[in-house]
Image 1 (spheres, rainbow, N blue to C red):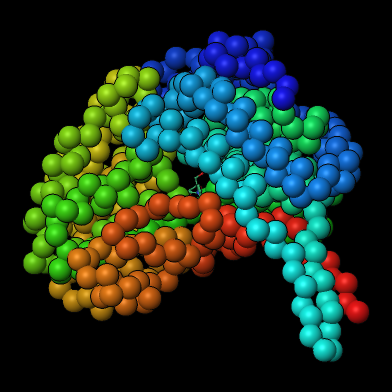
Image 2: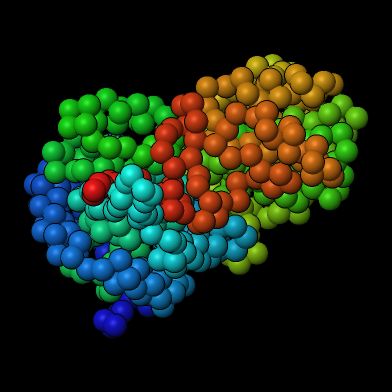
Length: 471
Ligand code: NAD
C-alpha cells in the first residue's frame, strides 16, 4: 500500500489548501479555515479527459480487484481519521461527537467496505428456451455534485458504487465545504489509480458546466429540488443518466400507544441530527392530543440536555448552521410561526451579534398545519410539533406535500406501526427511529425528492448499464 502522509490535520490542510483563492470561514467562529482555488472550464475539461483515460485502464480490473481498492480506501480514511474529522468540524461546523464529525468519517469507511462486499448484480436467465446473461458494465465518467451538510459521507455514497462498477468520477463539491471533499479525495487517492477520482471545486457555475459536459456519462446529484430541476433540464442535451437525491420535508407520526419518555431521545435525534441539516431528518412531528403535552415536555428535556457550541469542544453535540443563508431561512420560518401565534417551547431568539451562525435548538408547539415552518423545508434546528385528534387526518397531512424522502411512525405496537407506515408516501418509512440509513438498504426519494436509489446492489445498478448476451 502507498504511504499515506496525511495523518495530521496540519499536513492534510497543507496538502489541499491553495496559497490564494477563495477563503472558507469556520461557521462556528468566523475564523478562516483555509483557501481553495476555483476550477475553471479548462480544469474541468482536463479532469474529464484524464479521468476517461484512467477509467479505460481501471475497467480492465476484475470486480474483486476493484473491491479490494475500496477496502484500501477505507483503511486510508481510518489512518487519517482524526485529521479528516478536525477539518470537517472546522469547515462544516459539526461537532466532533454525537451523530456528527467522527460519525461521518466513520461512515465513509463503513460505506466503502460495505460497497466492496455487495453481491454483483450480474445474473443469467436460463431455461429450455433462453440463455441470457446480464452483465453490468461501467458507464464511463460519472459526475458527482454534492451539498454542504454531509460533504464527506455523501461524496463516498456517490463514488463508492461508481468505482465498484468500474467508473471514474469527477466531483463538484459544494462551494461551502470544498476542503472536506478535497481532503477526503487526497486521502483515498493515496491508494487509488491516478486521475480516477478528481475534484473540480467551485460554485454553481462549475456544477452547471459539469452537468452539461459532453464527457459525463452519468450524473449523481445530491442537493436541493430547485437545483435538481435545473440538472434535469441540462441532462436533456446529452440524455445524461441521473440519480437525484433532493430535498425533503419528512413527517413523523406518533401513535396514541407510544411511550413519550421512551421515544423522546430518538425523536429528538431524528429531527436534530447534524443540527437539523439533514435531508432525511424529521422536519414536522404529528402528535395525538392525548400525548401532546407529555411528548412536548420530554422533547424539551432532551433539547435542554444537548449542548450546542463550537464543534472542536468535545462536550458539544449540536453546532452552528453551516452558512448564513441557511441561518436566515430558519430565522425567517420561526419568526413567521411565532407571528402567526405558534408557541415556542424552547429556543428561538438567536444572539445575532455573536460569532458563528448559531441558531438555538427550537421546538414550536400549537402551530397551524399550513404554517410555513411546517410546509417548507427548514433544514435547521427548529421542529414544529402539530397536534392531531384523528389519525387519518395526520396521515393525510403527512402525505400532502410534493416531497417524499423519509417518514416515521412511533408506537409500542409494531404491527400497528407497520400498518400506518404502509400508508405513508415516501422512499423510506422508519418505525421508532428516523433517518437511519444502512449501506445494504436502498435509499431514495419520490415526488420532488428525486429519483433513482443509492446503496446496496440496487445502487450498484445505477452506476452501470446491463449488457445482455442472449443466445
Ligand atoms: P444546492 O442545490 O444549493 O447545492 C447543491 C450542489 O449543487 C452544490 O454543489 C452547488 O454548487 C451545485 N449547483 C448549484 N447550482 C447548480 C447548477 N445550476 N447546476 C449544477 N449544480 C449546481 O443544495 P444545498 O443547499 O447544498 O443542500 C441542501 C439541500 O440538499 C436540501 O434541500 C437537502 O434536503 C438536500 N439534500 C438531499 C439529500 C438526499 O439524499 N436526498 C442529502 C443531502 C441534502
